[in-house]
Amino acid sequence: MTGSSASGLRNYAIVTAAYWGFTLTDGALRMLVLFTFFQLGYSPFTLAFLFLLYEAAGIGANFIGGWLAARYGIKRMLTIGLSTQIAGFLLLSAVSPAWGSTLLVVWVVVAQGVCGVAKDLTKTASKSAIKITESQASGEAEGRLFKWVAWFTGSKNAMKGVGFFLGGLLLQVVGFRYALWLMAGALLFVLLGILVSLPAMMGKAKASRSARELFAKSKGINLLAAARVALFGARDVWFVVGVPVFLYANGWTFTMVGAFLALWTIGYGLVQAAAPAVVSRSADGLSREVPAARWWSLALALVPVLITVVLALNPPNPTAVVVVGLAIFGIAFAVNSSVHSYLVLAYAGSEKAAEDVGFYYAANAAGRFIGILASGFLYQFGGIYACLIGSAVMLFICWFVTLALPTRTDSAAATA
Image (cartoon, rainbow, N blue to C red; front, top):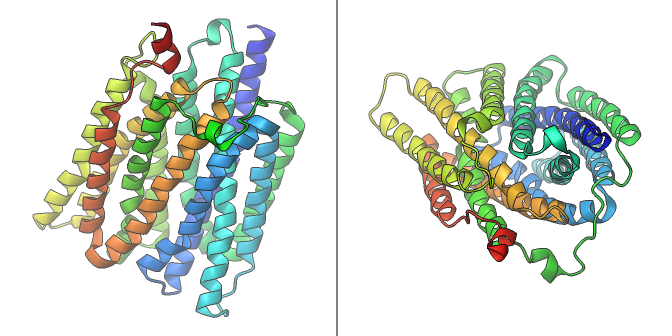
């Protein structure tokens, strides 16, 4: 293994480990906020509203974060992201149920917005680092982009699942405030590790000099971003508010709900990591992967339709139907997400990979924003049925967009 290859693998491992730590606390945060304010009597729509600024802030953070990572380097952006998350935790820990309802909601929404900025700055920097470190690798490490992306994304979601369980457990054992303090302390150790281990100028490149240049993305990136909006909106429209509230309303405890969501997310992450074994690889990196994205999108769109049909037949145990259906949904969704995460880096130019990734994950945040808003609204007025129908509609839109994805990069088309 050459020195460049070893350096690339080392930096990949460091960034992955740091993002694991971040994701663990981010998953726990979602359960802490959701369950704490559900206990205080807030409606499903208000619960969804608490997460809206978190996702809305992520749209801008992803987009500008890619530009900042290219201009100032990945290490600096990871440092800013981790520091911002710690600040968000400390802001949230200051809330008190004794405050008036309006002040309480506004404070939580703003603090969640800070955490949303932190999450997506960290995500954009971390995923951009994969493209940088993979391009540094040579010899035996060449051609590992799909595997590296799949492992990074899958392991990250497995850690997020552990975080869901951790959030429910911490809420039950130490309470909301002490849980946030413990997580802030853990992230401080992760931050110190990044400061002493990553190269200072890692990922620094020539950033776009104008808004027009920044928005000038390839056809593949633009279409994939549109598909990503629909894909993640379709997940969160029933997963964020609908499923937890539905399970709790049917007799599950907070710990049971947190444990189930944890197991689902861990399983989802494992399937993501295994996606390269499921999707056939092509020599050009696109000719088989793009059709796979299309077929898996269609398969996923059919899952919420089938769950809705079964529920409409009034089964004796509707909770079991939702649990099994969500498991099937998770398998197909994981493959879709992994293929999409690979394709954005396959379409991205290596010189400005951070900007392309930031643009793409801004679309990802936009999809989550739409899904969360729709989740609270649809569940409050139509229950789990309405959430499932909304998910199916979004997934058919995702499938339709993937039909137009190019099977060659712009550079390949130009030289053909």
